Amino acid sequence: MGQRNDAQARLWIRDRDSLGNTVDHRLVEAAHRVWARARLVVVRYLAEDTEAPEILEAAVDSASRALGNRQSIQFFEAYLLKSVARESVRRLRKNKRVEYVDTADLERFAGPVLTDLDRHLDDSKRIEVFRACMDEHGRAMYDLRVLNFGWRAIAKLTGYADAHSAEVQFRKKVDKALERFRAYHNSRFKPQSGV
Image (cartoon, helix red, strand yellow):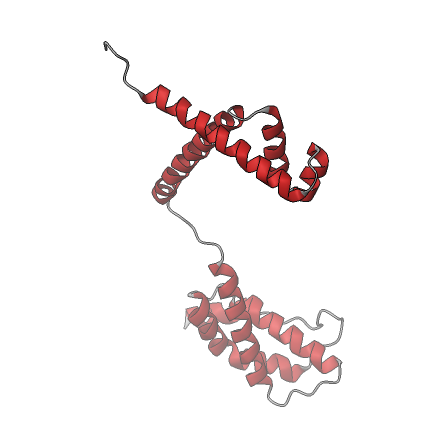
């Protein structure tokens, strides 16, 4: 019996709503009648009733404003319970967005990130070596492509007659650079004689 009185004491309906209108006494009485059911609705969705008073008070405020705007509410209890359920579902969805993760799980997730960082650094180093294998003109064209310049603009900036000839010349420069790049890597990984 003491728990029920404590729960009832947590519900407090103001005399005026958020617009300053006097709250209809029938609405206040309906809120007290549905309080126990409203708590159960909140528990159903949120697994506890700590937010129940706030949710029901907000539902009463909303109903009072609706009445102040000359809207008709035929069944106060049903309106309040529906509002409580709707708000509980909204809060449940909002709370699901935040997921707390154990520290051990975070460390497990962080492992692959370092591998990806290493791979990214390796790729960056390869691109740097590949660019070094190009001539100055090829590097300029490569940089323009990386900056999303079209072939027509690259042709104009590098002095080619049209987009097609710029693209063809770039492909030739890339092929030569790839040959140099492969030669560089092959020379680094060949076993030294006499070792």
